[in-house]
Amino acid sequence: MRNVGIIMRRELASYFATPLAYVFILIFLLLANAFTFYLGGFFERGQADLQWFFYWHPWLYLFLIPAISMRLWAEERKSGSIELLMTQPVTLWEAVLGKYFAAWTFAALALALTFPMWITVNYLGKPDNGTILAAYIGSLLLAGGYLAIGSCMSALTNNQVIAFILGVVACFIVLLAGFPLVLDAVRGWTPQWFVDAIASLSFLTHFDSIKKGVIDVRDLLYFGMLGAFFLLATAIALDLRKAQ
Amino acid sequence: MIKTEHLSKRYDSLVAVDDVSFQVAPGEVLGFLGPNGAGKTTTMRMLAGFVTPTAGTASICGHDIATDPLAAKASLGYLPEGAPTYGEMSVRRFLEFIADLRRLEGDRRRARLDYVIGRLQLSRVLDQTIETLSKGFRRRVGLAQAIVHDPPVLILDEPTDGLDPNQKHEVRTLINEMARDKIIVISTHILEEVDAVCSRAIIIARGRIVADDTPLALEARSRYYNAVTLQLEQPDQLEAARAAVAALPAVAEVEVSARDARLTALPRAGATILATVSELAVRQGLKLKELHLESGRLDEVFRTITA
Image 1 (cartoon, each protein chain N blue to C red):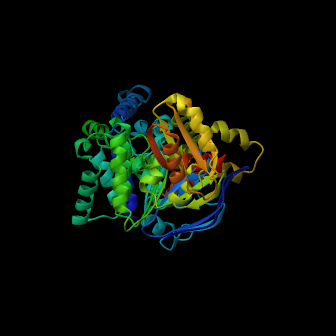
Image 2: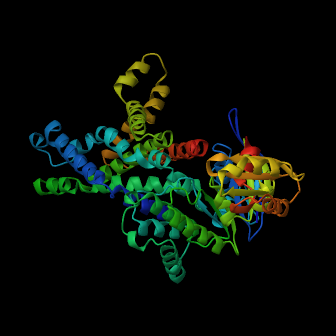
Image 3: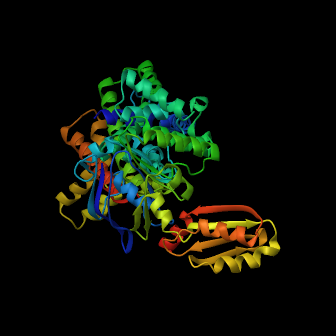
């Protein structure tokens, strides 16, 4: 497990080795705030909460998280450094987890930098800070889920642009599963349990329930299993194709 | 000890490495020769644990690469082909990262880092990012990471590729120094390198071992082994000299280069002709600029074996 920490620190530092990290954080903060104030009508609603701030996170992440995860493995394969990494005395799992946690830490940092929003609502009124905390945790889990999918897509190719597009598409599919668009289409002709099963695969269903302030074990389990599944897929993809 | 038994690697229909078996003992420097695409890199990647063999086994210091890969990798220093590194890291950070993964700690960590930085002359570029370095420096950074933990086994894929003659000489000196107590496997296209550092050479072609011998014994397979080359003062004596040398019973063939008035007499198998050729030159009154004995040409053996 010590190797996970070593690999994670290296990976995290490499995010900040280029201006990309700062540009990314800037764009994330600008968009998160713009969505809240303009699309969410933060002032017009006259309520001291962050409901509309978090409402947009699944959509914001849809494009921003694959931008974090696209380089995870695609770049290693392109530059050949994967050969260097995988011939050190580390296991494939340590490498997969180390890189994943680095990306997740980076996403967590970007999310933490939205704290002025939290200060603002506390200044303007008396929000339920428990709900806000739960929503932050939910958002972090959501980012973790997107990142696991992105990591897997990055392992499939040595081209970062392709990794990004695959990441967006795969995240969109998992996100969309909870939407009326999809659910209505199957509701008419399939049993209710099947509709529920599809809905329960979606990020949105679970994120919405945590966002309301209820951290349910089932939701935690969902994110845990989704993450584990896609990280396992990452490891398998790497094992099969790392040298090609 | 490195030991491989019937090591093979297939990619779909392509056979990259086909039934390769060899052993390397401490103190040996094994040179891996072969044309491009012969399977050198694939074999080294299998030993380093990066590519999984389709069939066969290999072990590093008694640790099987399939069943005990971490122990095998821990006893190994590996320079991948092209010396890939993390370009955005500084040389210092990169070497520290490797030292951490290699479990170097405390005084030993500091001593080993100082040693490789000094030995490979990296102190001038320590705080530069690797992507800004010249090819020669990058190769040296790659070598530094391979030896930082002082492993008993070194596998170096084209360690001198891209280096200038001085740097090549430095790296060969380093390899010779380390050769005393380590097992070293290097791959190269540069045949002079085999003479300079290797105690043994394996020539590999189309995935198979086609020769496994000492560099001297390989050179002895050359047509030019024990051949005698004469260069004449007076080009007009060339034709007479050729006829006289070709008439000697121990001479199999004579090659003539009219441009520099040079002729090379190739001996019949096993014969030594230096004495008879030089006597002949005196008898015929040939004015010689140069007379020398060839030791065999590795490149010619290489071409013959791998063609």
